[in-house]
Amino acid sequence: MKSSRVAGVLCHISSLPGDYGIGALGKQAYRFADRLKKCGVKVWQILPLVQTGFGDSPYQSVACDSGNPYFIDLAALKKQKLLTAKELKALCRSYRGKPIDYGALYAERYATLRLAFSRFAFDDPHFRAFVKAGRFEDYALFMTAKTIYGGGFFDWDEGLKRRDPEALERLRTEHHEEYLFWQFVQYEFWAQWEALHAYCKRLGIRILGDLPLYVAYDSADVWAHPELFKLDGALKPEKVAGVPPDYFSETGQLWGNPVYDWAAHEREEFAWWTARLKTALSTFDLVRIDHFRGIDRYYEIPAAAETAREGMWCEGPKERLFARLGDGKARIIAEDLGCIDDGVRALLKTTGFPGMKVLLFAFDGNENNEYLPKNIGENCVVYTGTHDNNTIRGFIGGLSTEEFILFKSRVAAALEEAGIRMTLGAGGEGLAEAIVRLALASRAKYAILPVQDILETGEETRMNLPGRETGNWQFRLASPCKGRAMAKLKKMIKIYRR
Image (cartoon, rainbow, N blue to C red):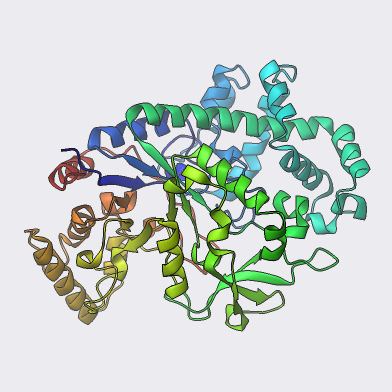
């Protein structure tokens, strides 16, 4: 009998190896998918695909439905004769295995894409149809205005700031080539993404995408729909998003995103949100809603506040947000971490969405800890850690001697309860593998492993440290995942029938 329990791997596109400074939708992505297939992995989880802005976070984008131009495979542009071999060679520096340098990328990648665009046939019927469809109209206008005028949309002249139709038409016609450039980068990105996604489907691998709850303030989304956010008459935020003090930060997290005016969304029957969810469900096979607790109750902070301590909880839209999704609801996963209460638990039960269980949170000595393997049920997704956690080895390396002894003993007890026989070394040898095994052996429908925990890498490969403003999102694989680590993963997937 075929098991309904499956294994997945978390690795963002940016973290793939390659020659041009950041992972892309080209050869290495296909190789990675092939490697997952050989290991028996059925789910590939990625972070948001969006175009990043200041801070380089995929959770802060200029447009929530955009594709990141950095992920465009330059070799594919060469095949289209939009770039030459000589031009690519000049870009191919000693990037392999090094952290992503976003400053260098910004300086050179857009120049390269503009060079490719200068050779592109604007009258291509497929491109014309793409532009006419209007999916990236707001994005292209927004990026054109940012390129021409700089600053944020709130700094532009009143006509453009408030999207006067004449001002928009003037922007489109007077800077038409710039407008078409931003349409071009989305055209190329989505053609490449759809090809990779189709390839993964043929391999039997589902893509689990990520949908941030909030959008960035300086974005095409807020510019196009200011009435859906809590803004003042000058289109400045009155309230911003974040979370109160928690495991990650003793002063809380002040994200700065404008919070939604949920009453306004309800008046339009959640049309904007329904369209956003449907777009995500058409882009990915499974969709994880980040910060799901904010749909039950959300934490809003005065825009002038210096820390998140000054915020308050407000009622969210709850299950009403999903009323028009139909069968799509069966493909949603809820990120229910952080400050969880009975309201969030009730919303999970009502929607039926699988929640998340993180094993690095499990071993605190509390036998009722919901993250302990023995307490994990079927309708959930178990992780060793997420993109916001340290790696297993990094986490263990940060423990004091006393903490390490307790942690090791609790992992050993969990192994015994799960019927897993393995020896843990005095120095922590085997601990990372033990936690991976506990995830795979659990009852959870999905067991998803960050690629760093499969490779057993240390803190230097951590993807993100919440609250830290720089040094995040830079992790890259030095080479394709192969060899002993992947062979071990294949064996474990078979043992635990995933």
